[in-house]
Length: 230
Image (cartoon, rainbow, N blue to C red; front, side, top):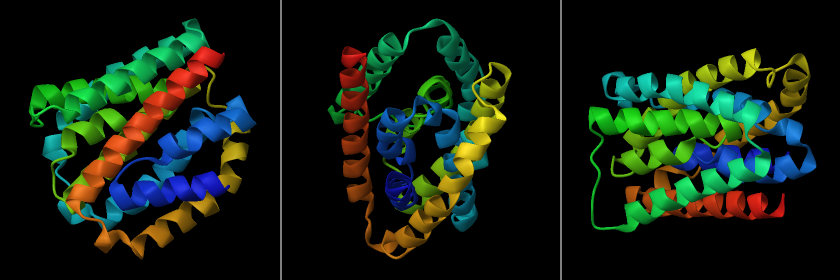
């Protein structure tokens, strides 16, 4: 419960991070928490954030990312069926780590339609297979102002979470049992959102970028370590 609160707080404060914070520990408690219950909590949180920052959302700018998310989610679903957990963790960790290293270079990737589509694809692939779909989109949008970053990420996660849950349902990774497991987590997700509103005005664009990179690095490291241990 505490990790859901912290993850929801982080996601509401900087735009993403619920799965990065909560998924690794919840997976250790029960693998059933990943990916579907985490995705459902993320959808719940994103609805609140999307409404709060609705005036900062650019649906047109997110269109290509949402298009890319659909085949990415299907590919992630296929991966869940045929690839071992250890290989999946190592691959995902390596991809996120590569994204962080690229972001640290002087090269600045503007969110062009093609790049948004690629980011959406990898977000869908990672989000459906592991619930950690935030890093690709956060990295490509990291130079936006704080409110636009939070709003656009929240809007994207609303659509992308529904896409991932649909794929997970058809491959058997979203069942009534997962819904029952998720319901007790929702109050802490809401409290995390409420707590974040008390500090969000103090979190600048620069701090968001730093937190984004740190969370992505933590996500990559956790996935790699877990893959080596499985």
